[in-house]
Length: 400
Ligand code: SAH
Image (cartoon, rainbow, N blue to C red):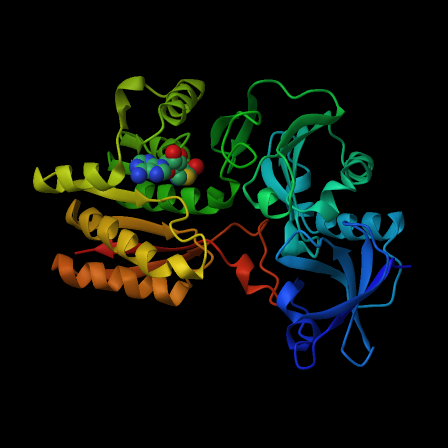
């Protein structure tokens, strides 16, 4: 059952027929019925044909998000079935008692607006839309029946909520309250303390797990005692993996003192000698220019900046930012060393990112090979129908 019917303008039904879940306000001709914001509505073509069913929010530019393309009821059973599908798809991860991984990846798991991450015996959930916000207790109860966890914390403080007319809500929603630090083990190799109350996103950047392991595998095989420069380090994830390589040393650089304190604590947590790591609070743009001028040299440089382009309109400016840091990072990699470089801007495609890095390479006068193309870990799948979900891309370059 749905509370209303949303009719699209003629010729505006192609994306939804192609199963893209977003209905922008400009595509809508009219509404029938009396739905409340957040209610389930039908999405119909201008001639009345049923196209999809989803939730509605008149306060958002994205007025509706489709949940199903079948004429099925969106009831408690539907939420159970769809959440269970996402959880089952993580069977590979679910058995790890101290694992950290993404359980539900919003649109890419056919649950628009819902993020759920697991840290050991706790879940952190993020409601990005009104449609999810209204059902958060139902969702928390379903998660608690499907997974053997101690508690669920809600970290609904993403900027995206403003566009939905929602306030921030950081609160415990089910079971026990999580401790101030939850210790997870990443890649069976490294312990990381996650602060779900104050950390970035839901507490940690889970999407980089495999890339951290890949880099350390290369270093271990090829470069004992590697000197590693970990730029935009946050809580030190890449650096911790690098420190599993005997003799390796790491410089973590971040603008945030809180992030660097987390990174230092994580080094101690793993029992690594504090002398093997250095922590620098700096703006990476300035820092790179300074060390490049000073002739610094590293065996491996990691460049994992925050999202420079929030939308398509910012792509050009973001591209200049990416080029700048990649140019200076290339300058400090020793011949034969590695640059692992990323963009997490959804608006920058993998093709464009490669072109930007190519531009930096040409200006640097260096040469480089792509050793691996990088993406988010498989617990962050990308629905083929939702290319916006393909946000993280990176290149592992061997630089000459
Ligand atoms: N590599 C990290 C995630 C990086 S997130 C990991 O593996 O977990 C981006 C980080 O960049 C954040 O910690 C943020 O504090 C930092 N940051 C943002 N702008 C910065 C700047 N201009 N200079 C230095 N650090 C910056």
